[in-house]
Amino acid sequence: MACSAPAAFALPDIIETPARETALAPTQLLTDTTQAGERIVAVGERGHIIFSDDEGQSWSQGQVPVSVTLTALDFADADTGWAVGHSGVVLRTDDAGASWALQLTGIRAAELAIAGKEVRAAELEERIAEAPEEEKGDLEWALDDLYFSIENMRSDLDIGPVNPLLDVWFENDQHGFVIGAYGMILRTNDGGDSWQDWSGRLENPSGYHLNAITSVTGGGLVIVGEAGQIFVSVDNGETWELRDSPYPGSLFGVLGTGNVNEILAFGLRGNVLLSRDLGKSWTIVPSGATATLNGGAVADDGRITLVGNGGAILVSTNGAESFRENFRNDREGVMSVVPVSDTNILIVGERGVNVTDARGQDL
Image 1 (tube, one colour):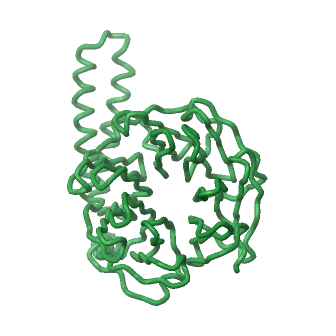
Image 2 (cartoon, one colour; image 1 turned 45 degrees about the horizontal axis):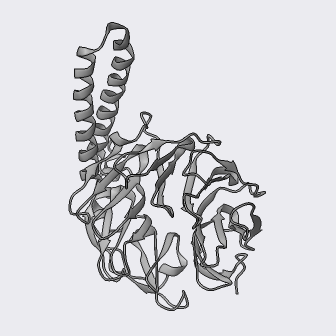
Image 3 (cartoon, rainbow, N blue to C red; image 1 turned 120 degrees about the horizontal axis):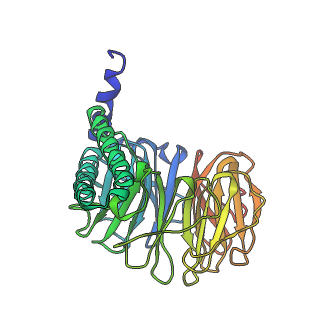
């Protein structure tokens, strides 16, 4: 027990310690990148957030109040954005990534999730009391699972804010979602000043990790996660439906192709799934890839790029009907991509940031 104690105290420390300024930030592990107007912003380990106003040729580092690894970011407009990461942190910027404020930590997120489960447990107890005898058994099993989950979450609180948030999506400067490990999903309607546990809206009793969230043309919202989980909302996130998935493995990314109701989901072992009807039916897209895919983007001309482990760069010029696989010479993992011209892309990953040609080769 004496050996484990320092780890328990380390988590609050890195939540309270600002990210250190370093010229090496663009060369270290970066996990996600996106555009804020004309600016490109990227996040990564040790609380690093960097931004570029010249398509990745030079970088500045934002002022960040935490030192945890950051996993994802999203901007509602050119100035207002959010980043999420380990220890359940949520950060907000109102100056296009130059400075950030802490809005939420894993302690508060866990408290919200526990309170939500306690409400559902109370509702389930009432259902059991009124249910026919032949239905009580299944309901009691479900109640036991809820109690077990609540106790586990309370135990985690004794250690600290340990569970990471893995993605974030905002419709505008008020309404958005953050998602993460063990089925965590929180919603805000006031720009992150307050949050509500939303996990009861998803059919996810096993608490599978939720890895990525996005909106697609036509207005649908999509979440993908562990064990092939795919959830779709057609009412701006108020309710969610679990869709049948043709692949039972983990999905790490999701994006819209730009066409109405089209979804592209991807993940473990290079699996790529395409739906043209908001997830009601799916096609497994031939890609030839076996590397895990982590991120993707669609260029203005419709070119789709997916990136993954081992330096994998997959490109489609036919609306995701098929992909051509390329590999970077360094074979380092790539986490995220942003198109920066008609032919070039900006990628981030294990080697930091690089601007490359469309196939991922350094210029």
